[in-house]
Length: 274
Image (cartoon, rainbow, N blue to C red):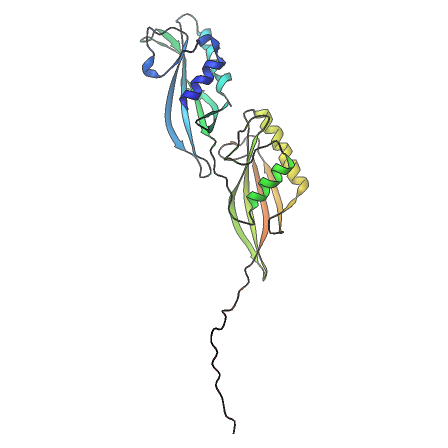
C-alpha cells in the first residue's frame, strides 16, 4: 500500500522530485522539501469489509517560512483525499481525517513539518449475497439495469466519480407473520455509495433514492415481490462504515410443503366376520 501511495505523491507533486521516504531513510542531510510516510496499525472494519489503515504523511521543508509547509500540505491533501488507487490487484480509497498536531520545528532534522493523517480503506468487500430469493441480489440487478454505469460487485469494481460503486447489504431480518403458504419478512437493507467526490455521492444518493421511491417494489427471483416500506437517505453518513441509504422492505418466501413419508411395506390382515 505504501508503495502505491508513494507513487501517487510523486506523480502529483513535482516539486518534491521523487523524495518520498520511509522514516529510517530520511535525516538532517536529506534535500528539502521531502515527504516521510508512516503506516499505522491495520484495523478490522465491519463484517462486510476488510480493513482500514491509518497513514501519516509528514512534509519537511526548510526552516524559512510556515507558508511553504502550508503549500506542501495542501498539495498532499489534494493528491490523496478521496483518491482511489490499486496495488497488487487490490483497490484502496484514501480519506483525509486531519492533522497529527500543530506545525513544529524539527531540530534534529533542521526542518519545519506538520503531520497529516489519512485513513486508507481496502475496497475488497464481500459480495453480501445470501440465497434465493435474495433481496440483495434483487437490488443489485435492479441497480445495474437502471444505472448501467455503476459497479455493484466488490470482486470486480473500481469505484470512481464516473463509475461509482453501489453496495447493498442485508442488515436485519425479522419474521413478520406466517400464513399457510408464505412466511413474511421485514428486512433492513443498507446501501453504500462509494465515489471519491462528495458532490458525486450526493447526486447519486438522490438518483437512487428517487428511483427506488418511484419503483416501490421489485420482482424477486422466485416471482414474489419485495416492497419498500420506508426509504431513508443521509448524505452525511459514513459511506464506508454505515452507508447513506436505509431501506425497510417486506418480502415473502413460499413455505416448504410438508410431505408424508412413503409407505414402504404394507401388511394385510384378514379379519373374519361371523
